[in-house]
Image 1 (cartoon, one colour):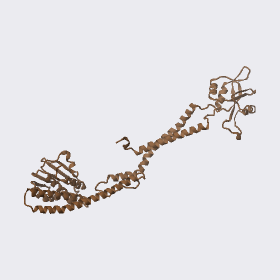
Image 2 (tube, one colour):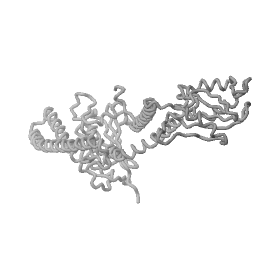
Image 3 (cartoon, one colour):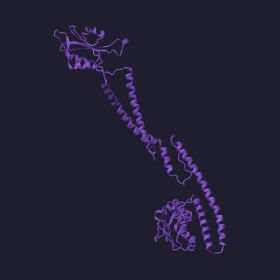
Image 4 (spheres, one colour):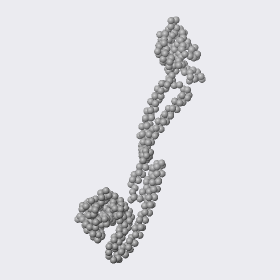
Length: 458
């Protein structure tokens, strides 16, 4: 079997594939969002005018002539490096001005009009709004150069590759927990959904396990079967129907053949009886007896379907007495002694008396046919509900004691038996809920034991 032919768990496969699909969709969403931002030229940035004002406030001083000047502080140097579009305007109360960067003309001329304002945000006219023109921030602060007014409209530190990476991490910090949550829900919900969807299929599988050769006409239920599996269930039901039809044709053929054989066998036996005594006559009569037994065994196959409906009380001692009386002449003629050992009290079971008689008859005939034509064949009825048939023959090898109950199995290839008798015994005993086994006899031969459920006492 190749690796691709190995069975797999549908629930696990669905869970992993759904989770993979969710992860792929999430990554695709991230890629679409980032690509759209890049294509639109949108610059991720954080508005940071207050930081600019704070840095300029700490760096502001006076030069030798009393004008405004900036000390080259580390903060100021970092601000200039982080902000390529940096601009600001500083104005003191004496009207001195210090600027850096490209100060818009609109903001350069309004400083004097805001001397009495401590802080404000300065926007653009509504009909000229432009996302590339951010609103300006004005704030009056105390510095080493005195009280001054600072105006700036910078967006602050632009987010470069490192900032974009940080932002991506923050984004994934939200996305990954969501993915884990979806994955957990998938692994919990998918088996439940699949189990509910396949509940009808489980019922069909249970029904299929109960189908055997004795339960013909059975079909798998189609209720609550998924549409994807319905063709398989329908095909199995169709196959079961064809098997039932074939089995019915087979039964009719076997029954007709057995009935047709009984008449010529009886005629042949009658004609043989009219021959003069001798070895040839004896051998021919034995051969016709085996033919008659084979025909009866074929009919027994058909009787199996009819036995056991309804079961009644059966006295196993009476069954053993009837079989012993019928087969005693045959056993004595073959050179055996037939011994019957039965208890004084009745031993009962529930079953079909005729079927149990056929089973016991097959065991005794098997001992007569395959024995050494000497010694004793014993029939013993025991408690709680068992019958044993023993002989003094060569016995059955231990490795073949299970196989001999299979149909058409023979211990030796040249055996003239049909190999149906012991299989018939097992079928009858199993129909009664019992068990038949072969073991070594007490005197070295074979011992066949039928064990049946005992009759329950009310």
